[in-house]
Length: 605
Image 1 (spheres, rainbow, N blue to C red):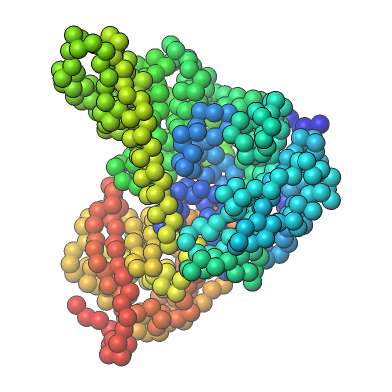
Image 2 (image 1 turned 90 degrees about the vertical axis):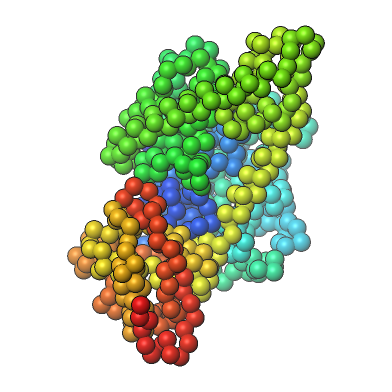
């Protein structure tokens, strides 16, 4: 019989179970990935662990467990149904070259059935069906059968459904097995099965078996270190345990949904769910001190806030409402995430500012729409408004197509939008957005190469050089590394002078030519700090950390990877220094190959 428990109790039970199975609990990472340009946000618990999945030893060992806050927008159009979310909490356990398929599946089954009380007969399983790259995963299927799952409840699906990775164009990947819970709905048809969009089956856990390495030429070669990476969605499993038909009826969402309904005069369920999801996600992003903007992460945040506001209009909310709802999110989640309370003032100020800015945009759109309508006359008969123009108002001013149609009919009774043309324009936009998202997966930690490793090491030298030249107030605020360049964000109130830039370059290059060894030690976080190591992301470290010392020049807590000696780096060159945000500057730099003269004489400016 299912054990009824809250999301917080589920997280505690999960960690306790895997710690009892010799896993070490590790800290959470930020929603903003560190040193990884492959994605805008942390989309899974494995993201911060990619170097260790590639073979880098983890300071906590080979069995790990944690809860990780995640954000995904690839399914944003599905939000509003029973289970899809943008922001969510993911429970994960990992084996880094330790146990593999049999123990991973047994652990999953034991936790679900014995510790959560989920009825085995309501569990349905999918495994990889096989293709030209890899064989059918009969091993996983047979393990499930040995645990009592019948053939009828095991389905073989394609790579699209049952394969993970790689995170970039190359790297670790492999088949997975997914666990679904039958919610008890009648089947949608004779072909109804797990992964069916009818939501009869809700995916609750995924075990990924990283046993291949995808090469640049598209080949899948066996990995020397085989890993297990799993993910269990807190919100979905909480809904199952509480026998709630949707995640929005669990205690994780109920206070947020209730606050939205109190403000609404037309409580449309889908719009309320979208508002609840988007403002919860926005609150967590703002807690990372990320402001809305028109580029990359800031643009995603802006889109979430404005989409919530549009749906607020559709349920009759006229007054400013995003800040009060964000305050509810902070109150509900601050116990588990103290940084929400610490950054509450920033969160509320920024989200209210964005709401008022968007209202001004909507007013501009209304004025342009009025001008547009001057091209039509009520005497024309039934007016068909171009779908492309309806999409323009949607994309530029945030008008839902329903709002455009409503305003159109108020002025021109009987008028209609060419919905087919609108949908075509909307689909083109979606395809372009997906292509852009896929482009983000080029490079990144999963494509760790000699070049990215060198640049990663160079950020340590740059960090210390900036602290030497500008003072010790300088702190890293973010970095982004590709095989071609590094981007380093740091706290500093003013534009660097040409002399300061030259001095930083000179210090880095002198350190490179000194051929300093780079040594790594594993110790506790407190001991690392006592030794003088910089540890700026303390909230995401576990009990043990890696400390990288570059001679006597630099010492930082970091996950790696790094070169073994500074002489391997090449000549450091700053390409650009610019403002990033208030009080934060950004440096872009490259490493150039040294000739023999460079290697015996430091660069001078």
